[in-house]
Amino acid sequence: MTDATVGAAAEVTSLAVPSESGPGATARRSGSPRWRYTLTVLVITLVLLIPVFVTVMLAFRPQLQSTSHSFLTLENFSYVFSQTQVLTWLRNSLIVTLATVVVAVIISAPAGYVLSRSRSKAVSGYALLLFAAQAFPQIVSIVPLFVLFASFGLDDNLLGLAILYVSMTISVATWMMAAYFDTIPVALEEAAWIDGCSLFGGFLRIVLRNSLPGVLSTAIFAFLLAWSDFLIAVVFLRSDSNFTLPIGLQTFFSTNNTEWGYVMAVSVIVLVPPVLVFSFLHRHFSIGGIGGSLAGR
Amino acid sequence: MTSTQARSSSVLNGLSRARKGVGLGGRGEKTPRPPRRFFNRTITLALLVIPSVVLVVLIYGYPAIYAAYQSLHNGNLVEVGEYVGLQNYSLVLHDPVFWQSVEFTAIFCVVGVFGSWAVGLALALLLRKRIHAPGFFKTLLLLPWVVPVVVTATSWKWLVATPSSPVPRITQDLGLGQLLFLASPGLAKVIVCVYKVWLSFPFMMLMASAALAGVEEELYEAARVDGASSWQQFRRITLPMIARSTYISWVLMFIFCIGDFQSIYLLTGGGPVQSTSTLVVLAYETIFGNFQTGPGIAIGFMMMLVSVVVAVVLFRRIRKAATS
Image 1 (cartoon, rainbow over the protein chains, first blue to last red):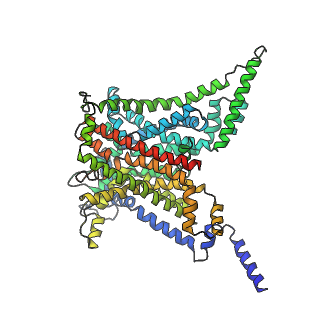
Image 2: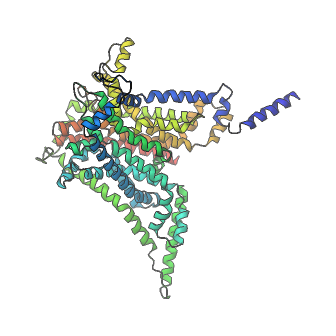
Image 3: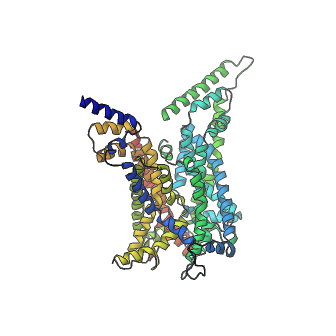
């Protein structure tokens, strides 16, 4: 009788929390592990993000010799916006980055489709070419590229910069697109082909229309890469008015007396766009799939 | 997935063959079907891939050949200079600074790859536990990778570099003395490696999360029934199941590490006394600091050779992990 009651009670509790299966079920007995794990993750996250918090904090803190007595201030921002060319650099960065994102998606989406759907020798060779391009050190190609671009007047030029950024993103972007296309059943296209749709039509109307998350992932990747590049910009850009934000930021450092408030204000301006893009679109961002896309061929 | 694709592509070939057959057989009929389906398919695929091939050849192929040519000449940024054969390479190989860079590059890559992998995998496993708001934490933990390096290098510099920075002050209060992290060669190396792990763990976390999502929960349940400890479950189930993705993430991270210029250059500039200068930073300094294009590019090529060898070795292991 008692045994049966206990058994029934146990059954009721297990019914009451049907979702409590897997790892949680065994740990449930010792207090509330869910909160403990959450707290652990919270502490780790806070510690790991100290450098990011520091940037934001210093940007809003008054300078030492400042007359204002408030704890928070916008004077660092008003200084860099009014006294320096930050707005021009911000505009340059936005133009170059957006151009890179659009062109990178337009080029890598069809290439990723070929990589995903075709199994021919030529495509394997192309996959190898992409890998070689990714492994090729920028530092080796940068001098010949500078000479080449200078002969077309594309050095110290935002268009030249965008072309280089597109080529920098192309390998990973193509793998990301291919990885996403792999998840779309070929049967969908086959149905369209039987209905008289061309291969290109099938790609455009069936595959690409169902690949918004893949396209967004690739776009985010291209955005992050183009927005934060330093090496290419520092070699190619010479005049102040053509600087992108990462290069502009370097002008605030001086050997003796760096005004950290101004540096951090510009830093915040550099970090806000990628963080905004990422916080709105992170649900769509997945790069882990490129593993399968790389090893499969 | 692959098997589905293989099947459907064979269906497609069969289809085009059948069409061809109809075309050939029905030549005398009034409505002959031209056997162009296969031809069309190849042409369309080629057209889809051509822009990307052109870009890769133009931006990687041409400079590779031109750079190889430059590495055999004693030129500078403007002129190609005289032909000197392999002299640049021997010059570099006899330079002690080069070997010092090789050593630090090796340290930097090993710590960068395995450090970020360990941290990333640990966090990916932790985020799989039943916690509150996992998506929120996952997004926050990606910030070190999302925030541009120019920004984080600046804040790391502020945290450790100057005498008034917080970290040296804390070590002083702890009685360790005032540690000037970017002024001593040994400490600078440590900081650069820690910074690289901090920058890269989110990428490894993403790769590990994607791989872990593919491991079936039943495997763990079966192992628990058999009495396997959580370490045994990790060692015998988790690691083998994600092995392929792990090797790929190592290859990618190795390439990212060996080619990484900006995180080192922006944090330490390769100093003090070139202690944190990897091969890329050394090549940059040689080309743009000393205007010696030939030796600089020679360093770059030797670096590429190493990365290709390592990538090929790791890819062999991936193939093995994929077939077993």
